[in-house]
Image (cartoon, rainbow, N blue to C red; front, side, top):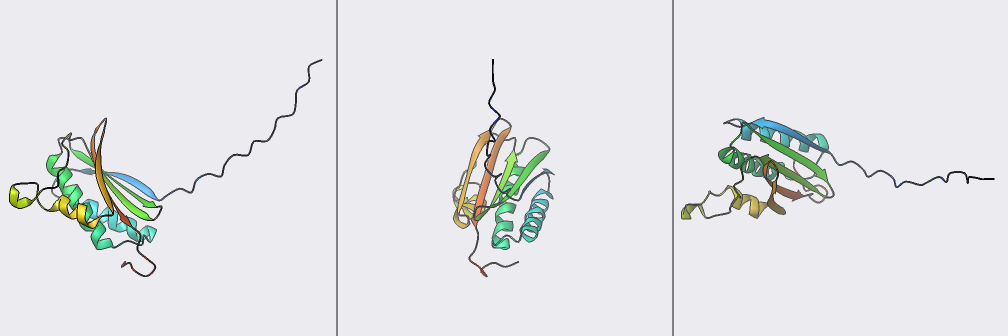
Length: 148
């Protein structure tokens, strides 16, 4: 006679807490940077993210402007995440051009990515099958250190 043991209950790990995040496509053109700034400003307010909004908006503007300048398609994608002690902003484009930090006096790209490099906690770029992503992170400020 064949007997079967009753199924054991398997204890699954608790689901990870979801981090606030979103992605939005922006049409390339003169208003893309302003739209990106507005999206990041709204996210910081909605999530009560304890970061300096002026710095986040400035760096977002630089990434979006640079992406539009090098973009070969009609859209870029803005990604914003908040959690684990930081705010992260990504700008996705189809360009295969690597970003470069350079001295504008030396004929480089200008101060934009120099600001990103100096004001962010971390920044970088990587390739995807669709193109290139450039990102920065800002650490959360100590209690009471942010402006809203």
